[in-house]
Length: 468
View (cartoon, rainbow, N blue to C red):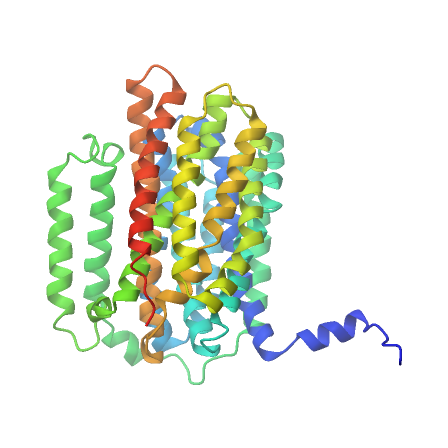
């Protein structure tokens, strides 16, 4: 039998470099930048809180300054991508993120820090919906779960090393030290996007921009912003959370105006008819609750380790890296399971697993050794990672190609609305607990019990995800 010679590294690279893999590489690059920011900023948050002397609910606003435009502008990127070209918007977003990162790194006061964070969120808002839309258009239904699993693995993959790196940088030079690596990564991603993603035929369509539903953009942005302000109003208006009825009334007015306006538009910014797709609606709700839980843990874990266990930034980085590493290990498997047996199985299993993880965190005493906390963080990553690709895959079922960008934008907005509300509500409840309860551990446990309830609701809704 003839001996098969092993292929050289160059030959393997040439075989791998198919047009589809090349395209996937171009989509992974901005995802890595977004993952770097997420993991490194979480490690730096306790140091930022100490540097600016912030309460817990105000510290949550440091995260939400990024998350609010990141969430609110997702449908905008999705809709504009359908008409102006997704590659062009990815490149523009990377430039905006780079400028915002410079401002944050140079920030000497809280307003400047919030402004830079808002620009960062504005820049990265398109990375997820544009990538989901491109994958859904360029890959067949039988392989989308696998491809989305590979693409999704980029964010947790960045979490294998960057949280620990961030911990070392913060311990050595302070929180500003995490941003130079982000600037370098953004430049590299810009170059990769230009080379790997094909350019859309035709130039910039000024007519499309002129006719775009900008009033719908303003109404949705106003509705989401005032809802968030109402949820965490003390840093905004000075009134306790969930008590400023002016903000509640404004939010309801904006949402009502949005529905009235969009139902009369031929090409609405938010196509409300998409919610008639039951699978899309249920999947989006579960995705939002999943992100509620994930962002809450990302916000709480660094503060929990610092306040309860007096952990260093390096230890915080280890916990976040373990969580991200575990998520990376299972993210591709979740997509493959969904391709084979449907999305409902991994979605429901993941949500039920989160019930157990949140209950465990709520029951752990303050004397718990750090290695057990690290294990809980890794287990959280395993459980929550299984459902990521199946949710993406399920949401885009039975969506017309012409609506892919808009649908991906709405789905991504709902997902990250859960993220920002999770951070806001966790910050409010944590601050109330720290003020009212005797021990910090009791404040954190009360928030974790809320997460148990949210995970139960997510599991029940996930059972309704029946693909057609």
